[in-house]
Image 1 (cartoon, rainbow, N blue to C red):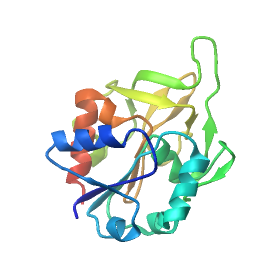
Image 2 (image 1 turned 60 degrees about the vertical axis):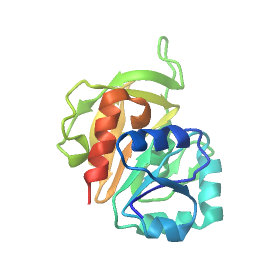
Image 3 (image 1 turned 120 degrees about the horizontal axis):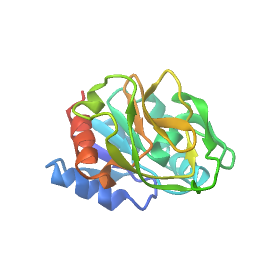
Image 4 (image 1 turned 135 degrees about the vertical axis):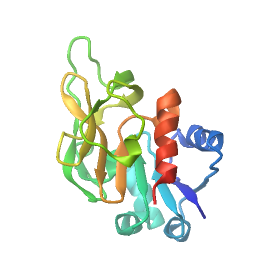
Length: 197
């Protein structure tokens, strides 16, 4: 099996499947550990509550499997947040692949929470996932929580404060934005992920 999308209960599963089909890379949606272990690449999407998503991952056995994966893994939006140690939402103990706590965005005049809409990427480090992505390219965000800037941050975005937009540690990548909803830039990032090995 080439690429699998983990069924984390999010509403963006179909749009992610369509985005991959447009790249001629059909993927199956599954919550079966055997399917995930046997995949060449794994995508962990997510929309909604961290606690609900972690409950689903525990119920399927994937909470134990995901941190052990050695193939490329891409967490998207809540899926990226679940890769961290914990989230203030709940609070919730997450997968612990990445050290740090995901924290709630601070609402300010002109900057409501959730952060919804297009925002720019500030590139910090070169990485194959960001090949042919330019400084200040726009991508689409929908989130109320965010990861701080750290040594694993590849790109950041500004929403009153600087937060991680793209992270990487070894074979685990994460995008806080939705590449499947980010037009040609998002398609390029997904295509880059499909080339990782």
